[in-house]
Every structure is written in C-alpha cells, then in structure tokens.
Image (cartoon, rainbow, N blue to C red):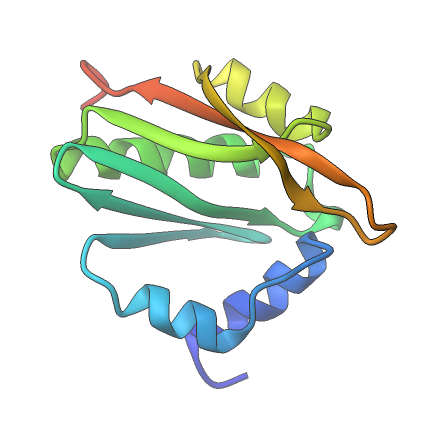
Length: 141
C-alpha cells in the first residue's frame, strides 16, 4: 500500500458492498475543495464549493464501528466545511441504512430530498437515497 488513495480504497472496500477504487480516490483527492479527515479505522471526504459542502463518503471498518469514530469524523468534516465558508452540509444515505441514518440524525441532519431507486443492491433490488442537510451556522469552534 503506497498511496493515500490505495489506503482509502482498501478501507472503503471493507466498509461498502460497492467500494470505490484507488483511481476514484486519487481523482477526488486532487480536486479543489476536497478535504479528508482520518481516524484509526475510518475516514471522511468532504467537498466544499462556495457556500455548500457535501460528504462524499464516510467509511469505518466494520470491526471499528460503534466506537464513536463516525461521529467524530462527521463533526470534523462539518467543522472544516464551516471554516471553508459552507453554510450547509449535504449527504446521501440509503433509506434502508438505519445505522447511518441514526448517526446523521444525532448529528442534526434533516431530510432535504430523495432520489428514488438510487442505490442498487447485490440482489438486484434498489433503494432510495435520502438527501440530508445540516445547517452549519454557528458551528465554528
């Protein structure tokens, strides 16, 4: 494992059924406004453009879940987005991902939209993506 992109791709593969490859991470990490925060067992990528930011991905190894890593990474991502001038932070999450939805609800995200049948499952079924938003006003330390 030589590069950050390869390291992120390996961790992403542990966390997701449809992981991104190293080339995708290399591209993202080279884009303006993309910030990465890492923690033992996880990472978050956030992109800020003008006054909006988006969580591109949040990954935590299954063995490291339920330890507050994702909560910390979301808070760090929100802080960086706010410091870069974003007033709202968005993300997409599968409607049937109860654990992730709970994480984001506890962080203060609210539903802002929906993408019907957005995520494909290995069994051929599809599920909606919920678009969630968090207002960042007043979140700077």
